[in-house]
Length: 143
Ligand code: DQA
Image (cartoon, rainbow, N blue to C red):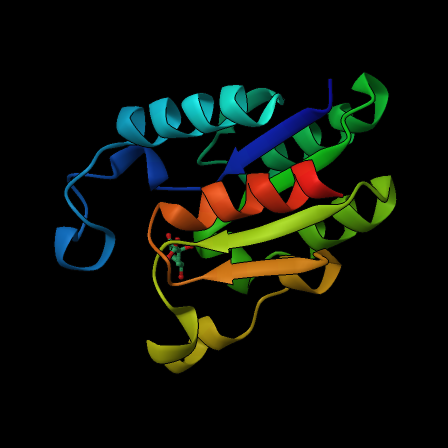
């Protein structure tokens, strides 16, 4: 069974509360339920991790290497646009990674158009809401 790590960055624990006009009304627990259900259907073992701290995200990505994780789904949230450390961690471990964003970062403020983590990802699902996570799991399952 393929092992998949799903990483969510800062403020994604506030889904359902934060800017519902952008991110929707469903909360983080709903997102995790949906990911787990879909992973079950696809025959994937999934571990979900969320942190508001850049270094904790780097640590979790590094740990994935030693756990023999087969694929990573990552929404680094605001760290997408700032974190060379998360980019370097993804490059260091060399595990296939897929970038997900709930909103369309290319149609928002200018500063959201740069994605450092995305440079280490082989596929991107952007602006599809929660469905992007499902598409990312399907992509990794099919590899
Ligand atoms: C986000 C987009 C980022 O620009 C933002 O900082 C987030 C969420 C998204 O999923 O749409 O926190 O990654």
